[in-house]
Structure formats: C-alpha cells, structure tokens
Length: 383
Image (cartoon, rainbow, N blue to C red):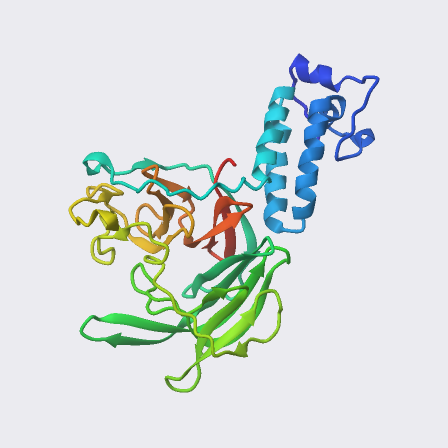
C-alpha cells in the first residue's frame, strides 16, 4: 500500500505516533506501511475491528466476489480515511457487508399496494451499486447471442451458467405469431471459487426457452435443480434430448429423463402482474396486484409521457418484491423496480449491460449480468 502524502488531522497523526504498546492486528504491525495501518496498530478498538474483519474475510477469500469487495473497500473506502473515526466507520461498514444478516422470523408480510393516485415511481438515476467483472466470455461476436441461463449458490459459492451462440433456426406459429428460436453455440459454467469459464458443452443446438421476442424469453427449458443443470439440445430433425450436468464437476453432460420446465421469468416468482404489453407499448410499465382483482387499480412504474423505454428481459427476484430489467432505448442500462419502496433505480449505468439475473452474496441483494464480452456482478449498497 502507498503512504499518504496529504496532511492528516492531528487526531490521526496522534494515533500514528510511536507508543509503548502496539496492539495486535490482522497484519504484521512491524511492517505497517501507511498512516492508516499505523493508526490501526496503535489504536485498540481499530485493531480489534481489523481482526474481526479478518476472521470474516479469510474463509471467503478464495471467492472472487469477496476478493473484489475487499480490494474496493481498501482502495476506495478505508485508505481514503483521514481520521480514526472514519476508519472505525469504514470497518463497521465492511464487517456488516461480510456478515450474513440474521434470519428474520417468518411472519406474514403486509400486502403490497399501488401508489396513491397511481403516481409514477420515484426514479433514482445513480443507485450506488458496486460493480466488477467476474470473467471474460469467449466467442463473443458482433451478432452473437449471449444470455445468463441460470444462477445459484452451492455451498456458499456463486455458480452461473451462460449460453453464447447464434440463431440456428426460426419458426413462426400462427395465428399468435409466436417466434420460437433455437440457437447454435456453447454453454459455459462460472464458479466463483475458480478462475475463468468452464465449457459445459460446445457447438450444440440449444433449446433453453420458448421464445426470444422483444422482451421476454417465454417458458424456460433450462435451469438448475439441487446443484444439477438441466437443458435441452436438439438432435436430428425436431427431436430434443434432455441433458444433465452437475455443477462444479467439469464432467461431460449426460442424457437425462428429467425435463426442466418453468414459467417465463416475467411470471416466475412474480409479486405483481406485468399488465402492459411491453412488446407493443414501451412508454410505460404497469403492475397489477392480483389480490386486488381490479385491472383499473395498478402501479404505474414510469410516466406514460416518458419516451425511450424498450424493456428487455424482465425477471423477478425469488425472495424480494423486486423486478429487474434491462432497457435498450434512450434509458439503456439495468434497472431495478422496488414494489415496496416504489422506486425505479438505475443499478448498472453502462449501456451494453444486459440479461441481469438475481443473485445473492451472504444474504445481500445482488445481480449478475453481461456487458460486452464480460460476465459482471453488482451488489446493492450497505448491509
């Protein structure tokens, strides 16, 4: 670490002055190289917090997510401090980040209700989510189709399955004109405890969802159950074979009699019904609460006067009253719709960010998503 060159307040300088006692810390105090490190060694409360944080971090340091969180915290938070109070606050913040929240007693949650007067949600343009890359995705071309297929946590480790390919065939079923696309490409596994991506299967005709229209993949035919990833691939003609791959095994997928099938991401885990037809009307997002049984009472997430919305890949959090989507219009980015707090937040500002998928980091809200040729991760601020 580099030493500070700016002037520091007397309080921090005093904490850095040599004393008769050097307290224990998670690092060798004889090698303290900055004023902040020296202050930690010479201040009992700071040294205790440093050791507490070390105990939390050490079992997690083999995972990239937590290494990145620790690096960002050191670089952007702790090492910017110019007082002992600031350092104490920084440690409290990171200790809370790496501490799983206590399990809340299961009580009936109050029913969600629409906004008074059906006012649009409060828009937050700069929600301060931490973001960083997890892995580089191979085979990304200009016209490539890439999507996060599913996400899970196995033994505390984040696992992600990604598909990268190109359109293989297209059929149109009348009269509804539902487009069914199957893609030719490769499946990859990301495990946060291992660097890079592992190819699950290459050059297959993947059948992972019912359709890929303007915004919704339709019914899902690929996903994870109890640590096993199930998917379908087309063989000869119209025949499809269900395949199974055990996450982390790095073995060849095997044929399976287990068929994976579930609702569209816009319906699965839904806390409200997406009322507006986003393929037709992208000027607003309307949410109806089923228990109200009245289509005329709804949440208007964004004003109908707002132009430039083109909502893609809506997906619900399985545990929170939250909907995520990416937008490829004027407001291109990843957005978060909070039905409880009535907010519409831009959580990932980069215009190339797509395919956000709910994730979890020690009980804290997070998403994984794709941006250009990278798999990326974003985590909500605060504990």
